[in-house]
Image 1 (cartoon, one colour):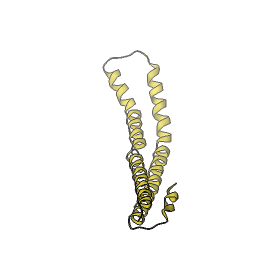
Image 2 (cartoon, rainbow, N blue to C red):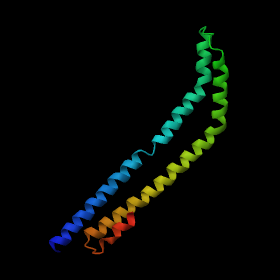
Image 3 (cartoon, rainbow, N blue to C red):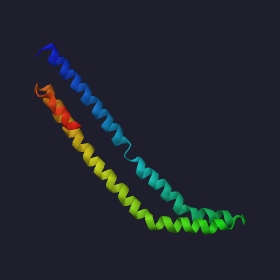
Image 4 (cartoon, helix red, strand yellow):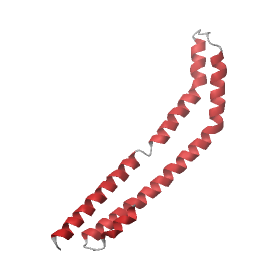
Length: 126
């Protein structure tokens, strides 16, 4: 193998490493939407009990809060399952796509390391 081919091989392997690193970074952030959903869900569903606890301690001001909390709870109850399902679907879909990208990177890396010359396979990742 010539120096030029070695340099091209190293460049392509470095590019694959960069792609894999980016894919891993994206994969690590996939749980963030569900964590945010869980936080919103927890806060929304606990609001009535939290307000009741405040009222039980004698806080009587801002009576409109009871109605607002009730409206928030009711509205959230109507949409929460849809949001949860959408987030679950999105995360599953992206995990499936990420697994495919990782497999393709491994295959291309193996071909490059085994001396397979048509390095143009890298364009398949884009």
